[in-house]
Amino acid sequence: MAVSDQLQEALDILRDSGVRITPQRHAVLEFLIQSEKHPTADDIYKALESKFPNMSVATVYNNLRVFREIGLVRELTYGDSSSRFDCNTSDHYHIICDQCGKIVDFHYPRLDEVESIAEQITGFDISRHRMEVYGVCEDCKDLAKASH
Ligand SMILES: [Zn+2]
Ligand SMILES: [Zn+2]
Image 1 (cartoon, protein in one colour):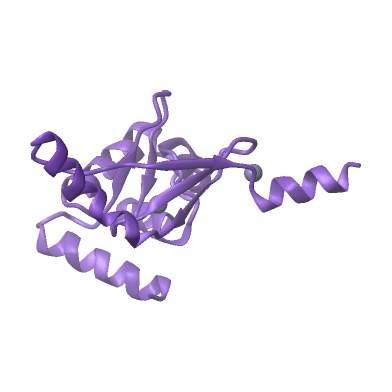
Image 2 (image 1 turned 60 degrees about the horizontal axis):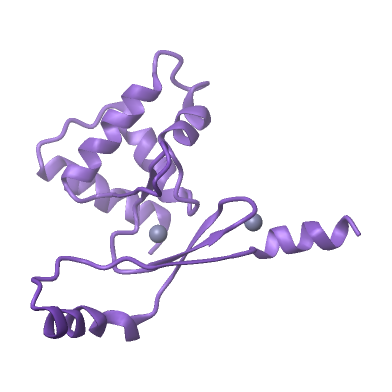
């Protein structure tokens, strides 16, 4: 889907949920949709602070929380202080670069059945699953090559 379509759809969802669309909210949402990098609240703040001098990291975070509550974004926590935000809310997995921390989406539908298998084996009611793959991204591999 084109970025502009995705943005329009997200704005419609906000409007339907009765969330006021302020210029800041619009900008945060637009940045999230354009960025495929799963930014932190801090990344978003840094990218937009020149445009919105009165905005704080806390404002960005509050906006992200509103988006999360209506299901527009997912918050990814990695055990450190900074959550990453993902506006791709379809089922997908993440591969994470050990060197630069970049997170890239990939799909692997064959894993869908892991939930029903887990349910059968353990008797749990399954709510979700999570898997991450780690490695070195192409950019970092190129950088390593260039420095030799
Ligand atoms: Zn990398
Ligand atoms: Zn993602």
